[in-house]
Image (tube, rainbow, N blue to C red; front, side, top):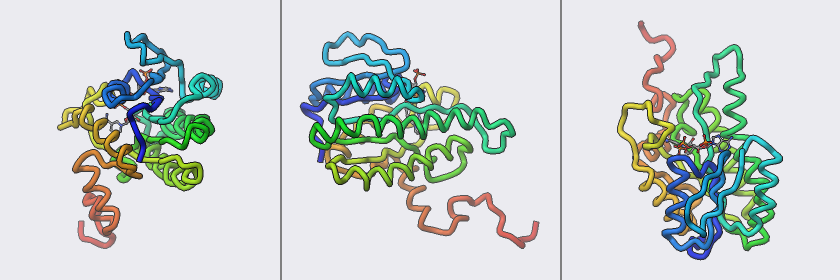
Length: 238
Ligand SMILES: NC(=O)c1ccc[n+]([C@@H]2O[C@H](COP(=O)([O-])OP(=O)(O)OC[C@H]3O[C@@H](n4cnc5c(N)ncnc54)[C@H](OP(=O)(O)O)[C@@H]3O)[C@@H](O)[C@H]2O)c1
């Protein structure tokens, strides 16, 4: 279990849809301070919110943020991108860029803040994943979130020894700028973040924010065609 009250929270990608909720709801739950980190930090008009420059793809920026926020007790690895990268693209630049943000950026942030979390009693690392960690319909984006899921599973074991709770948040479409062009039912970001903080407070290793995440996770235990009905069994008549 991780106390939100009195905590010092750092949120990456704090200016985004979920990031803004992570900042606001930490304070609603009694956090003492929130580092609202972003590539372009902004003033929040609240003395408990400390704007901090942090580009997760820039090692110098990550190191500087870690040096500036040595009192952190909860790190929310929320920054992420979706750029339409496809595994089949012959020029893999977009895919590499996406892995830089969604996988390597999140790993670098975790590694940079691990010593502070240890020094401050363990605390928590929350990685914001996706239902697409478990189903490959999101092409390059799915691959980045699947890789971060695997990394999270390793970090959970590695950091248990220093008393850090490593938790994964899985969610489907949520109403943020990232999904502005998506015409489909979406979660309310406030609801997703409330579940995330409830999960951390309860000590949950994994937080499934919606039915689609629960359904897809359950599907991993079944035959692959259960998750991918579009697959035609080999030898089936056309
Ligand atoms: N919305 C969904 O349906 C959904 C579903 C599953 C998972 N997620 C995940 O939820 C997380 C938050 O996304 P969101 O929905 O809130 O989208 P969003 O509103 O687009 O926010 C994403 C944030 O990440 C930041 N970011 C991107 N690249 C960065 C970098 N190199 N360094 C630091 N920050 C960077 C962006 O910063 P700028 O403001 O500078 O661009 C933006 O503030 C992401 O990890 C996303 O993959 C979202």
